[in-house]
Image 1 (cartoon, rainbow, N blue to C red):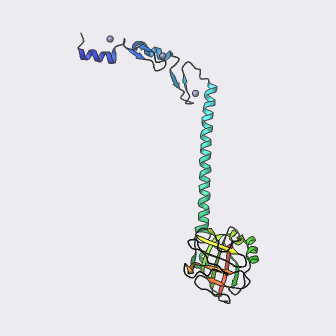
Image 2 (cartoon, rainbow, N blue to C red; image 1 turned 180 degrees about the horizontal axis):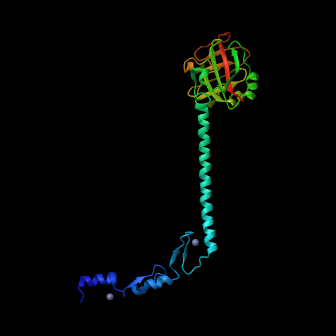
Image 3 (cartoon, helix red, strand yellow; image 1 turned 135 degrees about the vertical axis):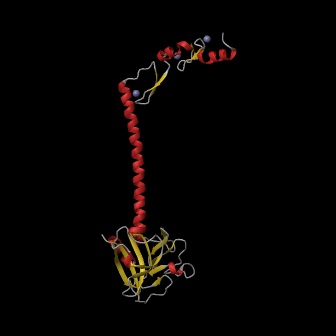
Length: 260
Ligand SMILES: [Zn+2]
Ligand SMILES: [Zn+2]
Ligand SMILES: [Zn+2]
């Protein structure tokens, strides 16, 4: 004789004559027959341990299909790995370019002051060195482009024997090919660059506007961070806050690039 409580327990857990639902065909099957039924039920789903395909027991899983599935899975994995490698390569290239510009080769991408030439990577080379009394021309600047690698430094040195850039900025060498409409500079890094025919060539911080009639005459905002050379045949005009350098031999106009 079973007590009521244990009867209930018996029915729930042990009674072999209760009905269970087959996980495949969803039919009611006596518990005692369930294992046997599920072993043969065609609707039972099986996952292949090798190719991870889920298929019904009644379907055949041929070895060739299995191999093809494994191959497809491998190919997809390879594809996504290739994409990953590609993205990583691009990131590395970007990083290298940044390091190239900022640390290894030259200057940060903004206007800088008092840079000893000896602090630059030795691959930097002066290709243009004239006193401010010299009349720089568009043709001169354009001709320099062919000597330049990726970047140029434009700056000014005070004194014939000085080796210190009092003011300088670095940018891509395409600056020498600019054809800027008046007072419409191009931004590279944190610097506004302009090369306006018959007017002037120079730079200013990108946070500021330039005010060229001939050269950049802006005296109010960031005067110390502006460089501007006349391009109308006469020398001048400014190296930072030092202006009206038109006849001055003491100051030198400097353009540098990396050696080939
Ligand atoms: Zn029973
Ligand atoms: Zn079944
Ligand atoms: Zn398989």
